[in-house]
Length: 450
Image 1: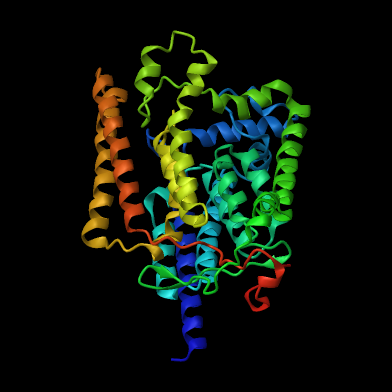
Image 2: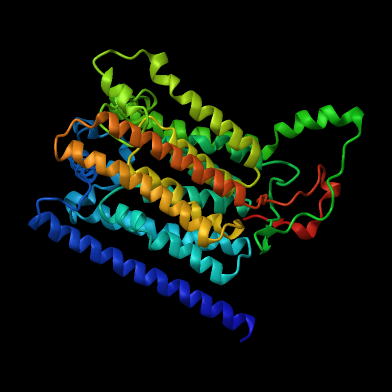
């Protein structure tokens, strides 16, 4: 079979996967409607009811924050206004469509890096048929929208479209504050030795056995007399300045607009609340038990922010080590961010599941036995926690201490698995180096971006 035939066959395989995934999600949404109407335990996520109520308030010209526990950008409520006009399940179809879009973006990113079609298909399967992912959108959770925007930002950067990437980055940080952790890696990856404004950057491609092609020519070394000047000027390149200005402008434009409409209520509920959040309800976080025991005591701002210190230190180490390998850096950052967060719910796992398929082709870890052991350990630690959570929530047993110990074990499992993934990963910078100056640039390595 010739190369064109192979590509067509691969495309048909991907298209079939997406069609089957679409059917699966439609059936789950329809089943969810039936379960909600006939069974005591609802299929629909309770957050979806909050989203829908907020959207109904917006449709009536009121503030979405009149709905208690709505702590998201008003954009989400506006997106779900058709819930009140067309059908209550509109949002579920929107989130599931975003879920499928994530699958398409995963395939696009891997093909841009010249990953073989069979590995692209396996990576796509990891996302499309992961029970955590196909239930999250069909139950009415908005995280697939965030995942799609993050992957689209990566695609824009890979194609040299800095302004588009900046626009979507500003929007996604406004929509869901956690992607702010990706700011430094993005700025670092816009290195003038790899990325020149107006040119499509040369991508580092997959070549097999968990390795990647590297730029074969060495970067020109500046002489000592001008080395300091080049080091300083290279920090403030046009691409970095434009990305910072555009993304900041978009973030503050949306934030300013909604502050004008909903005043301090918006600012507190959508942004500030997440920086100082203390939740006494049981969750996967190791902090929940301390918060539960001291909830009647008013936490100071310093106490509320101190929990960010471990997160900050871990993020800093990961950025220093892996920033140039952008998809892997995003993945490692997100796993660590979730593991050390003050509040952890199952929906947060989707944040790194959408990035996992992007790194599998560069991993030397075999499913048998190391990979399977990591999966079993992670799921076992989660199941162990859920057992104690069930006894507390549904049986009313006083197992707070046991649940906290289970949270510690879950943190240990996340840490162990992340370390294993790092150990077996082949470091692969996303962009090839092209030199300090235009005279060192090989015109065949980059094309004008559109």
